[in-house]
Image (cartoon, rainbow, N blue to C red; front, side, top):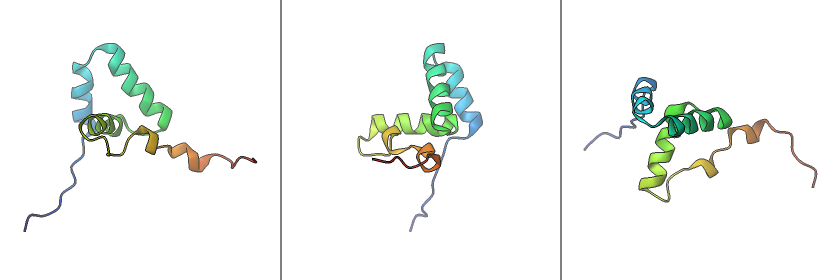
Length: 74
């Protein structure tokens, strides 16, 4: 029986990918990572996963700042 293994991009691999992208796309990844407080490698993974599988976790599913915000009175 094959073992279940989760693979993730390493920060070094993410940097290699970013170095090959046009500057505006590279900056978009970096800016998005900063905006949602996620490592850039996770943002690259989410972008690729969203492109390959429409049901994968995406940016709309991730809002790490939501838990830090005060609840709104509605």
